[in-house]
Amino acid sequence: MTNPPGPLSDIRVIEMGQLIAGPFCGQLLGDLGAEVIKIEQPGAGDPMRHWGTKNDNGDSLTWPVIARNKKSITSDLRRARGQEVTRKLLATADILIENFRPGTLERWNLAPERLWLENPALIVVRVSGFGQSGPYAGRAGYGSIGEAMGGLRHLIGEPDRPPARAGVSIGDSLAGTYAALGALAALHTRKSTGRGQVVDSAIYEAVLAMSEAQLTEWDAVGHQRERTGAILPNVAPSNVYPTAKGAEVLIAANQDTVFRRLAAAMGRAQLAADPRYATHDARGEHQAELDQLIAGWSRELDADTVLEMLHEAGVPAGKVYRAEDMFADEHFAARSAITHARNRRGEEFAMQNVAPRLSGTPGSVRWAGPDLGEHTDHILTELGLGTAEIASLRATATI
Image (cartoon, rainbow, N blue to C red; front, side):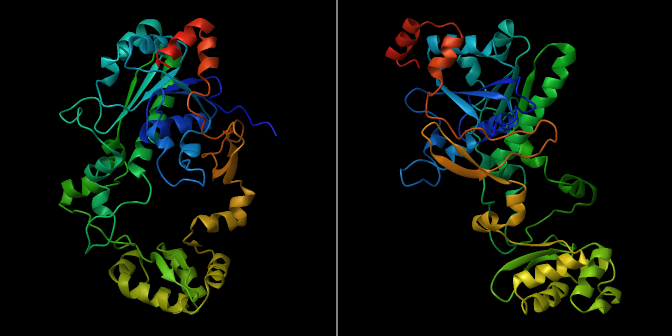
């Protein structure tokens, strides 16, 4: 079956970033149909080609996902000839993504102002730890540092233990997501102005943007949120509860009407009229004892029975899934939430499908992460470079 073209199929993106933050932006745009051409260092490539869990061949299983739908060319951006070729490519592009330390593009003669001389419509997406300005701009900034300074790490984990971390690189992914959102906003603005602009996505600010009302609470009443483990204080019941055979279920019934349905499903409808549990505020004040009541009920039943009863009653609930549970779930299958993609060598990889879904022009996963430099000759030929010039660039390790 032929994949649909996607809503960004007329957009060319050049990705210079590495690791996760910038490349995740490229992944999102590629999922929505953009042509994403990734520039990598000759002979080395993006470190993500070698990071994470590996298959039996020793190949990274992260690379097929983060680099899906992308083309790979090689160019040494530290050399004048590599920079020249890159500027020629950028003259044909709509969006440039980079996540180097601020000032790197300028040292490579690829500053936005120079690129705009030949392509004034180019949108330059710059992802970094601390942004393109300010006293910390020049610092190295991994996603973990952005998570710490953006306030997320302080809130993850149990209150009597040091801060924990999410099991995925959430800071990098958030910065990449906001970078993609900014790129789309800049594309929209370009329709009226005809000009590109810089999109400045800082990891710590992307994390901070997800912090809800923390700053407001501190400024208004001096309230500092703290680590609370699996719960949100005063939001009850909303927690993970045990079941008879070891599986855990998450039940979220903190709204008054939903709690009444939960109490009835438990066979204890009177709880909804009990002054300790009748309102949202009251349940929050008695959160611990309410969780104990629900856990006492759930641990007598297996997870499937608990979920069947709660779904029948209209109570939001679900198992705490691992990867194997996702593969076994009929809803994941019905919506094709998991898809498969092949690389040029015919290797097939399962991975999450595109989100969000557009009804008229949906995105798609068209292929898995490419081999290093797989598309170099084709792209350079398209730019007008002859066979001899390409051979010369390759002989000097420029590509």
